[in-house]
Image 1 (spheres, rainbow, N blue to C red):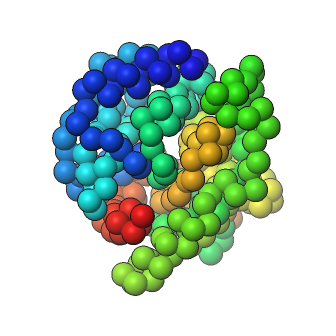
Image 2: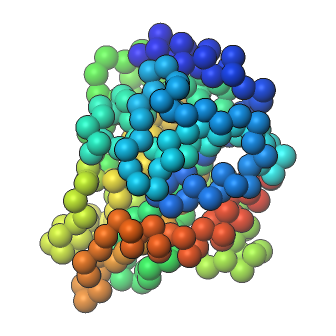
Amino acid sequence: MLEKTKETAAFLQSKISVKPRIAIILGSGLGDLANDIEVSEKILYSDIPNFPVSTIRGHKGQLIFGTLSGVDVVAMQGRFHYYEGYSMSEVTFPIRVFKQLGIEYLFVSNASGGVNPDFEVGDIMFITDHINLLPNPLIGQNDEELGPRFVDMSEAYDKKLLSKATRVARKNGIHYKTGVYVGTTGPTYETPSEYYYIRGLGGDAVGMSTVPEVIVARHMDIPVFAVSVISDLGVKGKIIEISHQEVLAAVEQVTPKLITIIKEVIKGL
């Protein structure tokens, strides 16, 4: 793992002209943030040694290097999921590589189903904590050079970054919610009973990503800010049939607001 991580990082360093401080994972339908990056290089996943390839519609499958709000960044335009058949080490491999590149912060976005009855489609939810129903990506032999065997998760989502995001949202009149994200395997959307179960566990939103990347980031002591866009509802009386296209459409409506938040938080770092 470590050898492959270093090999991939060395390849990328030979191709780029920036030294990214921040890594951004752009989830379903949120790739438009890439348009605001002053791009220096774009590299297809398929051209990167040891990198998986994104197979999901709405995920372009490339790394973008450049500056955003005056800060050097790397953005993943498309992520990897456990349900695509990748191992957890493959799903989280980019985070390992980003650490080797010297990133200081990780920003993550996703589309998710809201199970909190106070939520509506199109809400922005800042993630304050998570519940993991996926295999833990740290299972297996641990390399102390990557991080400790046992990882403290009492602050999986950085409180300082969260505070900055809430101030930015208020300043710009952007309505937001906060809540707990529940990570599941997918690729099926939840049944009504599963939605009720997730709410009973203490979840506010549910999705098929994010948690593995966050766990690995914390393993390497990288502070994380993460945000969900509520793309459908798993609330009694509001559950309807949902398609991936409808998820993308719901996310598209609030993308400009999310871009404003991420850009201004980065500007303040």
